Length: 124
Image (cartoon, rainbow, N blue to C red):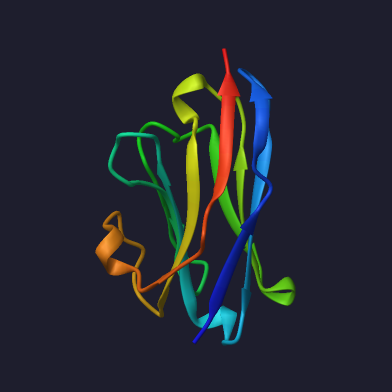
């Protein structure tokens, strides 16, 4: 099955932008619905965004709607999370997740494959 590796995290200031990448290997990337979750210290892992395997649907958490954009490049086996107007509350470890041909879901249990995460720190 597919394996996921995230990158692109870092330390930025409030108002800055970052683009996270999630490279998939070992499977047919085009058949996977991809999602991003995040977890801040002492908090539960929370949904950020998801894109359906066929690209027809995208969903976002209310807290990031209008600031974050999820996308993917089939040719590069990569999913992206473009993050703009970053806020201190966006500080977290960001995880990429995948499920085979599933509908986009806000629920972490809907995704069977997870990456190791990449840290995003936003200073205010």
